Image (cartoon, rainbow, N blue to C red):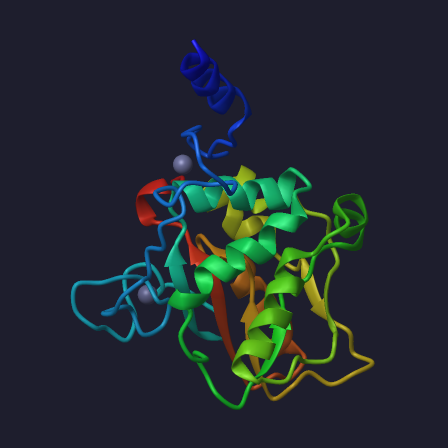
Length: 236
Ligand SMILES: [Zn+2]
Ligand SMILES: [Zn+2]
């Protein structure tokens, strides 16, 4: 009888994985849901997409009319990572982001470019005020520290409070952000920039930022994200 009660108590009170519900001895997620899936080469030289043999640009990015020269990501955004990142971004669970970063860290190699200043993809001020936390800015500061690269002075701004890209199809994503970003002309943009965002999906956000930076005179724009949505999960 006592053993049954013990089992019941453990089942009721033990923490469970927030993504799949599996019971855990400790922690918020099981190892399976947060198993890192690093993005291994070969990849497209421009957009960083996984390809069967190395290419300078692939079917995904050769139509990009963008000054964005290269994008790299560290990990595939598998279901467990997606679940927790959604909690961070849309569930107010900002305290989970340092843990996600720590779990991603062994898969994050050296800096994807050298001689650039790091710049986070900015949020619109109204959205930042509503959410109270800027995950891209947090990740950019962590990456700058990790790679011992200078964080750029602020200057890139989001002017339009556009619908979240995650709610749109790929086609709508491409036009949703037209003219959404601009450089604050009171300062000069760095000569070389490494843009940082949390997740790469279609690259529309990064391309829109790159246009704004190039218009302001930035010479070379690359980008990096810790996570990348696998192609099979992208909406058409
Ligand atoms: Zn799980
Ligand atoms: Zn490509």
